[in-house]
Amino acid sequence: MIRTPNHLNLQGIFPRIARIVHHKGRNTFFRFFARCLPGINHQRKRCPLNECSLTFSDPYIHFFFNCKLSIKHCNEIVPIVNQLSIKKIHSWSLNAIDLNQISHHEKTFPTLMAIIMNQMWNIICYNLFETDKSNKPPPVMNIAIIRKELSETINIAKWKLLKYLDYQSRINNSNDDVKLKFEFNRNWQTKLQTRTKTRRPHKKKTKTRRRTPTYHNINVSITTHNQNSHHKNKTIKTKINTI
Image 1 (cartoon, rainbow, N blue to C red):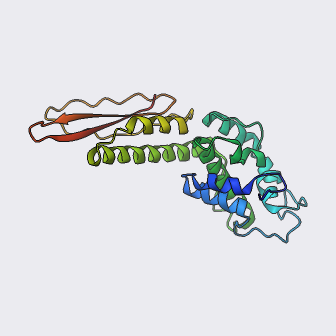
Image 2: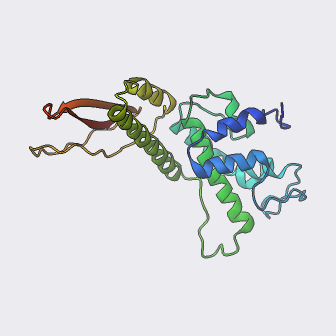
Image 3: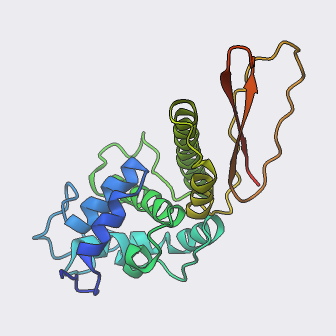
């Protein structure tokens, strides 16, 4: 079993990282724990940022958690996580991103932490490597940015599930939709409000479409009904409610 100086089980954390669906965040997570982020000088013993200049033994731990640049964003990260995730954190540290401490079914928290890690990496890269800071605004740890990234990731996961259930119901007449919807709601528990547009099947009589109200938790419901029984065709009516 491989452990870091902070007693993290690396062999156990990489399979958790592989299940993160946010691509940029997953890559940042993986490279952070694999110690292969581009531009990080392992031989450097002192922080090159003028506002910090502290000595360190591990550049990865320093830049993400102990640098004066990252410490400045600690008060922003903690309320963002606690507002958007069911799981709470008390401080921004290496233990906060230890995915071994959470259930393997949980998807919201790992995805959220991956998005935050990627945004932190953008901030670090800007301060370390950006040469045209006067014309390029610095990236910020903004809750609106994190919320948008998380919302888009959840909506993509919703549509993948709906597409899979639609395929199973048309091809195999599968009855696993209730089980899969239950697992989706359990895995993606969040306080985030999401809204997703859905297509309704064509009807002869045109009716005014009403927007479905959105609430906190996520619920995916799919109903099937028979249409044109003479031809024995089935149409799938998909509907997403966030309840």
